[in-house]
Length: 160
Image (cartoon, rainbow, N blue to C red; front, side, top):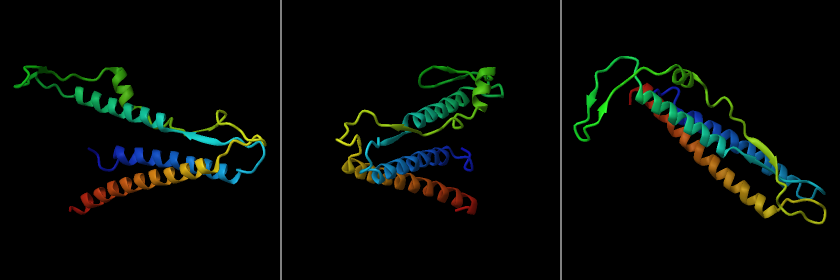
């Protein structure tokens, strides 16, 4: 595992970026709670993040199944399975070199499904305050996870 380009740090950063965008959208919704005709905004990024994690897991799987150096077949003593190692195909090499995180872009969408009041505004203050709290908590959890990862890197550098 490469400590400097740790996947956890990269993914938590993307998650924190998405949560920050959500926090801006919720703040805008709260600020416009009395604006006639205002339609609340939401930020969707979780499915993109899940796809990135799946892509990174696929890369790990491909790396685990392939090897540049030839290794004779190994027989698993417990199952009797024969494990052989092969060189990656051209498609696998291209996929391994691709950056699945580069297409990440949290999407700000207008909520057209919530009911509107007499002024055409669909912002519910209680809902927005709940979203604000949940988003802040999730951000704090991710920042603690990232802090822990950087602490591990720092300890590894110091030799502790």
